[in-house]
Image 1 (cartoon, rainbow, N blue to C red):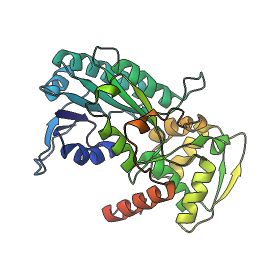
Image 2: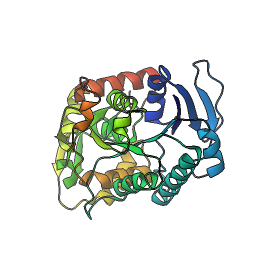
Image 3: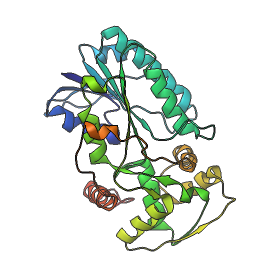
Length: 300
């Protein structure tokens, strides 16, 4: 099949390309020009909000992976909704068989953060056309250049003690990037997955406090964590801006989302991809090795 990957230069996209290229003809989409590669992957330039360039990138395709987000922009929710509506329209126009979307875990409660709510709205916009959408919903992806993982890692490395708000007791289910890629590749073109939504997560459910402590043990550190009821997620995001490599415009929506539980409630994806999941500590160690090999001083 011919498969197009929007968001191919992001954390997930870069890891997904080789997994798909072993079985499919791949077109990777970037907003900027990319040099020719010798791995058989064709790179094209397109902006997800521009219908003309989206249509050109989708020409002749069967499946599109939608890994686009605008986190970091002050109007990220509007931009993401616009891009998703454009994708739905152009995918229908060229007769695609499937859209695969990676969204975020989290329920639809009134207290849902702006970031997680935007992820849900993006999925709804993608499904507004006739092309069936396969949605995978994940919590934090453990990867060397994942903004959420870098934030937690920087807290462990740079602060011997930290005053944290109530979100440190929120349960979550992080997942290794290798496992996310495995799940994404497994649903490509599968008729039984069309129009379905799946929760994906690693084998370990923990609080963010436990996550910080487990990463600390791996790093040879034992950070002191003091939980207080008055430090709001918004204030936390500004505080994180001072001690992590992630800017406040990215950290704020991420941290505000930590108040919402992000745990797998539906394990049906295992019927389609019954592989051995990566334990959290193994995922962290793999991310650290990857970061060290890439020379990233913040997470090495």
